Length: 303
Image (cartoon, rainbow, N blue to C red; front, side, top):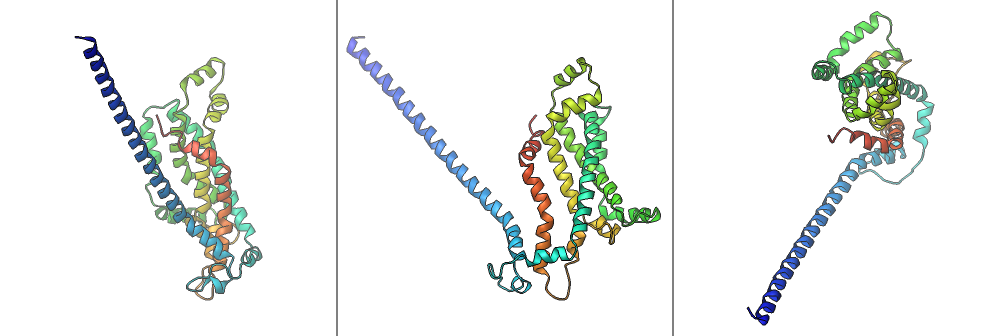
C-alpha cells in the first residue's frame, strides 16, 4: 500500500472516530438535558405538594388572627381585622394546665419508652435472642387490636383501682402504646452498628450496660432522636384515652380543643387559635431536631 493510500486510510479512520465521539457527546448532552428536565419537573411537583400540605396550616394560623365574624364569612376575608385577641382568650380560659398535662404525659412516656426500647432492640439486633423474628412479630401484633376495643376493659380496670382522672394512667398507657413502634425502629437502627466496635469495647472490659451507654447510644443518636420525636407526637396527639379516662384535673390539650366546638354561636377563630397554640410544641421539637430526624429516618434504610 502506497503512502497516500495509507494517509487516506488513517484520515478516514480518524474521521470515523471523530464522528463517533461527536455522536456520543451529543447523546450524553441529550441524556443530561432529559435528566435536568426530569429533575426540574420533580422539584416543581415537590414544591406544589409542599404548598398543598402547608396551605391548611397557613389558613388555620390566618383564621386564628381574625374575629369570629370575619372567620365565619363566606367567601372568607383574608386580612381584615387581624389581632391576637383569640390567643389572649385562650389563656383567660385556662389553657395552661392542659399544656402541662400534655407535656408531662408525652415527655415522661417518651423517656420511659426509650429506656425500655433501647435494651430490647439491643437484644434483638446486636445480641439476637433465639427466634428474635417471632419476638418482633409479637411486638407488631400488639398494634393489630383497635384502641377502641381495649377502651372498655381499661376503663373498668382504672376505675376499679381508683385512678380515673390521673395523669400517670396516661403515662403508662402511652408508654405501652408507643413501645412496640420504638422497638421496631430502634432494632433497625441498632442493626447498623458495626460489630467490630462492640468487640473492641468488650476487649477493653466494657460490660453490656457500658457498651450500650458509651458505644451504641452515641452512634445511633439520630435514630434515638427520630424515635423520640415520633413517640412524642403520638402521645401529644392522643385523644381517645385522654377524653375517656380524664375529667378536670388531668385533661390534655386534645380534650381542651374539643371544648371549643359548640352548636350555638361562633367558635372557628378561637378553635384555630387553640389548634395553632397546641401545635407549636410539636413544630418546635421537629424543627430543633430536623437534622437528626432526617439522618435517623434514613439510618436503617440501606443495608
